[in-house]
Image 1 (cartoon, rainbow, N blue to C red):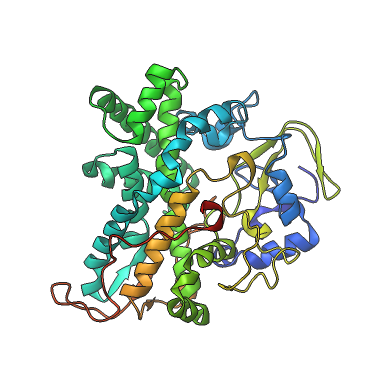
Image 2: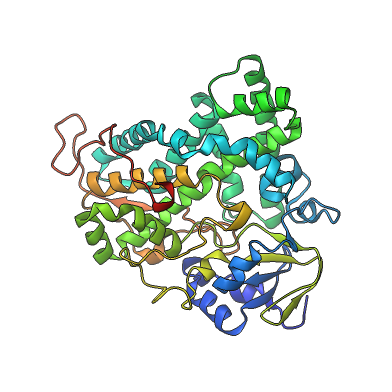
Amino acid sequence: MTEDAVPASELYTPEFAANPYPAFARLRAEKPVCPISSPRFDSYLITRFDDAKAALVDPRLSKDLYGPGQEYLRIFGPNSEALNKNMLNADPPEHTRLRRIVSQAFAPRRVEALRPRVAEIVDNLLDKIIPQGQAELMHDFAIPLPMMVISQLLGIPETDHERVLDWTQVIRTSGSSGRSPAEDRAAVQEAQLRLHHYLVDLIQAKRAHPGDDMISALIDACEHDGHLSEPELVTTTFLLLFAGHQTTADFLGNATVALLTNPDQLDLLRAKPELLPSAIEELLRFDGPLPVASPRIATEDVEYQGVRIPRGSIVGVVINAANHDPAHFADPDRLDLRRVRGPHIGFGHGVHYCLGVSLARMEAQIAIEALLRRLPDLRLGVPVSQLRRLPAGSPFRGLLELPVEFTAWDAGSPPPIGHQRSPSTQAPVHTPEER
């Protein structure tokens, strides 16, 4: 690492966890390609939009951290390969092969068939909290919703949801438990091991008794098409499980806070619900759940903005910094639900563009519409400065807790105006590229 590397202690602070965007603005202006030195691992951050978009498709920046250097094992521990050696951490042609097998599960028409079930889950979760007049929205709504949806898609039994969620939350909340770094790392390793054993057992059960679910379809690809090895079957299932609920849960929390702290935009969305599809895109640009794309490694010396990134370096493409680049977004730190839709990279770019984008958009649209309609006076239960977030160094941007308050009513009585349940036949709302 070069002498001008910025220590992580100067960047990843409690203030950064609360609001990283001033620091991102400083990096974009002063060090758009910035070496960062930290105890976990050294890396180079790319923060400007054009550079970020180029880096996401740069073949010299490999996603295969399990290659000859085994960088992923060094950084994330010995149990990581059993769950993370999947298409997210692969380059073409391996990535192309794995993605093709999985992509059929996320075709827009198949995802759309889940809409009534998603609406039902949303309403059932809200039914439980509405009589209370208050809730911890992450635990009560934002986290269980996408977990239940992706579990149904994969075929994970409902009786297993709670323990599977517990294991994934250990991974998600790493660094926030008060444990020492060594204890925290051990807890993550244990959660990974338990998840691996669970998925191996589940796959064996599905092999004996297949169903109409994605895991059964993957088993069929593994056994009959010969396109998926047994380890790939396990790691692909984990990727779909974790990515299928983690980022959506964090997005729902971030989006709720963004709306509640920008009342003019909240009022606008309530008055004009037809803005919801574009609002989802703006909320994702404004405060996305994945601030930095998953790591890449330079397979040769590369140069961005006159800065040489040596071969073997870890590279982080800072999506949330790029999505606030004033060269591409006017007044980027302002939430503007009427913003002319720009080419944000909140879902990534290139061959690693988010596979579950249709599902994520559909869940977000149903969830936010229902929150605003059924809880018309929804408000934060604590000042925004007191919200507890994931640690500043987390690969995710999300909330540990989201206390909210609203007017309670008896779910056994006729609902007040504005509190109606979602019609299960609600017409789908498509984004332009899905039409």
